[in-house]
Image (cartoon, rainbow, N blue to C red; front, side, top):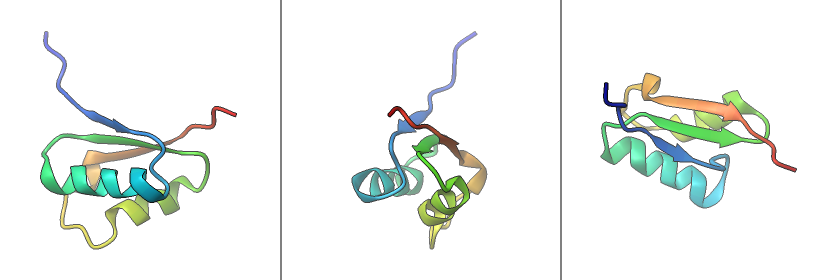
Length: 66
């Protein structure tokens, strides 16, 4: 059984990671897994803001490696 491809963007709460997650959602059909240290719901809303994409393709998880 082959695994389906997906994309990991970490961190994705601001800057390049945020814009990369938005771009990947907008230009591919792959699921995107994004991470943030805090405010997971806010990060998800920020990534999806003004995008016409299926929001179920985006998963955001809390990840703090400090």
